[in-house]
Length: 411
Image 1 (spheres, rainbow, N blue to C red):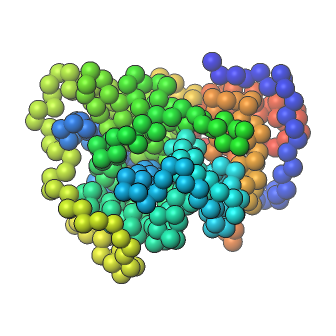
Image 2: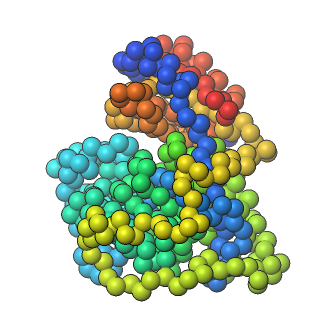
Image 3: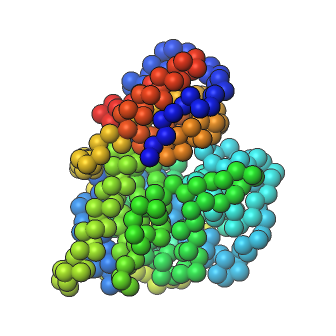
């Protein structure tokens, strides 16, 4: 049950230094949370597609990108280029990435903890640490990621960073992400179990996994969530029942709860088809065989450009069908949010969310970057709330002399 009794503990006053015009912009001029909708459901054992909608339309992968970063890390562990207990030094570039675990330049983190930080909190700074450890620089690592993706059969995917932070040239599809999910399960079976980690400890703090499917869906054991404003709420999930495994992908959720509820529907569709034998004539995930793995290596910018999507049927994101993810009609109130403030620094938004999470542990903390003209603002939001809990929370905050706003699903 959602906790709404904020009177049981005092909230330390937050100092939010921002002009009223900028705050108004953050509340009213931001883009909609939902991006273009895509989905695919695949029998991981046979590669048969059980359901698909816009599976080949180009989308921004957001933090689903970290699945590829982790695949590369698992490759490196497998061939001895990395070791789980190896300590990696955090660069200034990595430490400066918005939203992550507590890391400062010059500090070290083990490969294991960097992996767990990527899986549970989707830490952008930990993703950059892994990328630099493998590729030298994050830019070089992104080129390696793209090449490896092509080798796996992800022919419509281009990566530009290790984390999934917004980049207009970073693109993928639901089909490609399903391909990557299955590759993680089959090629890195021993390491895939890390995706089922519910929580891990970092510097005396408990970090919980953002993937709610682990607790909500029978047989679910991974994989990864993602969000940026241009893509909406994304999720790749896998579940196994009666010896059969399904991998499903959803892009463009209108909220955390709507995305999760849609994923439950997709997984149910898949298992129902398997049970009824409706998978026998289903099309294959990949029509053409993936390119033979010729080993990893750095490629130049010119070479990276040659592996960009060239299929005539590949759609540009700007021209993609603006289909909205189906809303959950059973629990529409779970799409409300409370905005706590807008900041000039992502770290300030993260700090406020960390202080607030004990009050609403079932809410999803979200730092959302928006364009405010000559600068970028970072909004601190608690999402996935009911209308009642969102309003009660904001009323209590205002009594504590704090700034907040209730954000409806249609805001």
